[in-house]
Amino acid sequence: MENLSGNYEIRRFPAVSEGRDGYEEAEAWARAVAFGFHDATRSAAHVACSMATYEADGRIFTGAYQTGPVAQSSLPAEVPVATFGTFRKTLNIGFGRMLETQMVTAVTVRTPHRRRGLLRRMMTEDLQAAKDDGIAVAALTASEGSIYGRFGYGVASLERSVKVDTTARFRVRPQATGTVEVADPKVLLEVAPKVFGRVHRHTPGSLGRQEWYWLLASGSLSREGKEDPAIKAALHYGPDGSVDGYVSYKFAGWDTTPATMEVVDLVAATDQAYLELWQYLGAIDLVERVTWNEAPVDDPLAWALTDARCIDASDSRDMLWLRILDVPQALAARHYPADGRLVLTVADPLGLTAGTFALDVKGGGAAVELLPGGAPADLALDVSALSSIYLGGVSPVTLKAAGAISEVTPGAAFKAQQMFAVERATHCLTHF
Ligand SMILES: CC(=O)SCCNC(=O)CCNC(=O)[C@H](O)C(C)(C)COP(=O)(O)OP(=O)(O)OC[C@H]1O[C@@H](n2cnc3c(N)ncnc32)[C@H](O)[C@@H]1OP(=O)(O)O
Image (cartoon, rainbow, N blue to C red; front, side, top):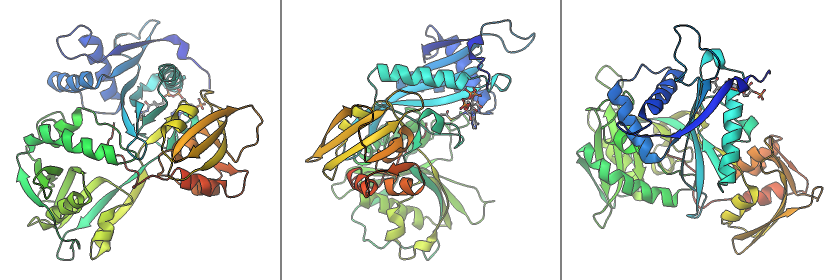
């Protein structure tokens, strides 16, 4: 492909809220993103509201701007032809350990400027800068499955959409130990960050959430940019009376059959809270089905129901894509439930962190050593495959079977599976 990305100037600037210097530039950038994702043109109030949350997240906007003359009557040069957004939050890498992560979002390239290398240029520059800044991993959620592997990203967590039949056959086996009560959804502005914080600390694969989530869950800002009066909320109280879970949901309307409640956000800090929020959802009168588009694939609900076939889950898909930027730093940051030594030869299409690395684990802690080139390895893999297995959510044995990992020492893939295992199912509740 001819690389024409040099015909553009790349600019980086922080998100700022309305009234601050640089707002016009940030607004033009946000409008370009909305165009790239085929959204309706946003009102000034919607953009301002979103921008305030972007500023709170500390987002950095990258835009590509035309350097030559702009076509007559077309969008002006101040509107970027390509966008690329980043912010940083912590990623739970298992056993409560956290790693600061470069989160990549809002990647768009205006149609007449596509396939000229703009995504490649913005991505490679940004990943290098993040690495230089001491960041060991980057993450994104992908619009299409075929774009990001070439940049070293690998699928590290899955999710699925479920339709749960909540007619008479729906029965959750364990006895409730807490209670659920309905609340004004606006209380979630205060409650949701605290409950999510607990979930984040105990869920491998969880990423810190952007400010927008609390607005969405509380009905303060819908995806359409307005208040959402249809949102309802229920809170779960543990045996000590404190709130340890919530569900935000809305009715699909009387024209939908069977009558359906849609989960907007379900966050539970204990196993009991999770099942009891489902018990609550299953008990709502005049409703026969509850849907949720961000459900875990390894879902305790299926094992808690007297009839697991109440769950119709057809759509299982990639969710979090991870990209290790610094192998020694990332490997040393993890806790390992099994001791052992593994030598990994890692290939990297962007040349950021290729090499042969010895991972020595004793008592769960790791020492990582870069070995001279050509040193014998147990496993050879691309950085995307290493990124996939890093959070314990994807099996090295499966990747070996897929040809994505080559096993040089027999049994090394299984050993890696044991070493990279995490304490509970990997799941990411944060879309970005
Ligand atoms: C993290 C997120 O934000 S996910 C959302 C991504 N954005 C979208 O899907 C919005 C619609 N799509 C677009 O805006 C653009 O087509 C983009 C951003 C996907 C690609 O931008 P471009 O500037 O055209 O990509 P660029 O020219 O840099 O191509 C880089 C490489 O990716 C490949 N590529 C680009 N888009 C795609 C695609 N949709 N599917 C498969 N491969 C792709 C190119 O062939 C090229 O391959 P190569 O360098 O290995 O030869």
